[in-house]
Amino acid sequence: MKIYNTLTRKKEEFIPLEEGKVRMYVCGPTVYNYIHIGNARPMIVFDTVRRYLEHKGYAVNYVSNFTDVDDKIIKKANEEGVDPSVISERFIAETKKDMESLNVKEATHHPQATQEIGGMIDMIRTLIDKGHAYAVDGTVYFKTRSFKDYGKLSKKNIDDLEAGHRDIKVTGEEGKSDPLDFVLWKPKKEGEPFWKSPWGDGRPGWHIECSEMSKKYLGEEIDIHAGGEDLIFPHHENEIAQSEACNGRPFARYWMHNGFLNIDHVKMSKSLGNFFTVREIGEKYDLQVLRFFMLSAHYRSPLNFSAELMTAAKNSLERILTAVDRLRGLEGVSRAMDAQEQEQLAALDGLCRKFDRAMDDDFNTADAISAVFEMVKLANVQADQNSSAEFIRKFLETIGEYCDVLGIITDKKEELLEDDIEALIEERQAARKAKNFARADEIRQQLLERGIILEDTREGVKWKRA
Image (cartoon, rainbow, N blue to C red; front, side, top):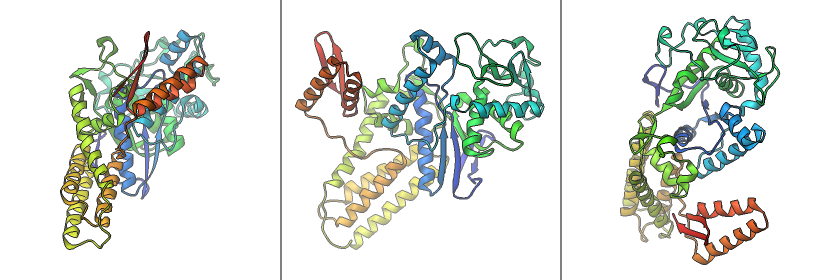
């Protein structure tokens, strides 16, 4: 199995640190709002990587964090007049709902930055002790030029770089020794959450959070570190510098980055009005369609999102689900498989190997999906009511197994009858009248998962099928 390593800019044979085990860290979202479809791409891509590694027999320790302290979270909290933790906990819960709808598996660990502050302080203290960081008026900076390999991931020349940290005005900024130095700890501001530290009350910088959480849950050296390509610099570059300077050993063996997602060939942006949350897309399509669409291109390629491409993905997914549904409806004959059936199963095995070859080549999901379509075509041609029950079962199990590697659920959702929809809408209205908004939201979500979209209007509740 080969992985394209951003660090070396080439495909490399995957050799784990420990035989049969994989330590994998994926940078998660900052939880101040519903996740958008750009956030969904790395979630889906690296969930599929994890699934394939598990399919190959690896035990995967998969860690994906939630950044739950950040300027955007604080801004939203101030707008709503609540504590920042109220915002972060709300959107962690909403993110988990969206991940479940996308069939993204729960991580082995989902650490939250605010719960790991003690470890971050210890790491910063070690960096100071080793001469890689310094404190100025309550701010601690990483001494970027003290790490001789800085720029090795992004291939940037250190002399050409601007300061590698978020554009946040921090007390003590003028005390920097070098404009390239980035923040490890920043002093508190009025009305912001803070923690006590040897350098004064404050909170950690963004980059140190992932270094510490990766170290705590996976160890000082890990197999795979992944995220969107926008994180290569400065975030991942800074993670490498502070982790390797602190621990004195390589941080991650393989660095994986997914390409950007564009909307109708234009970068997604709120100002352009082409910004979509996963929740909004879920009102138009089953989110399995979004997952299938995301996997229809190689993860390193830029991906263009459009209504036409989503419709094509919906139709393609429907072909697979219809074929599986048909196989489930075939009882078959209670007999041993004949020679022709054995021959067709050999062809099916060949398609399984084709799927594995595609995934072994840097997780080429587009070619892997092609292999699944060939399995479906073979099943449609070869399996019928006269086939042996064992032959039919083998096709069902195989297609189901390989769809599961891609995270594609093969169960067709039964269409709700109109009377059932109206009854649920009535129950929702009663719940809202009783101010039981949790139950009302639950019913709305339940209907959405069955492809029913509700619209609250002055004339009452209207509904339509997605």
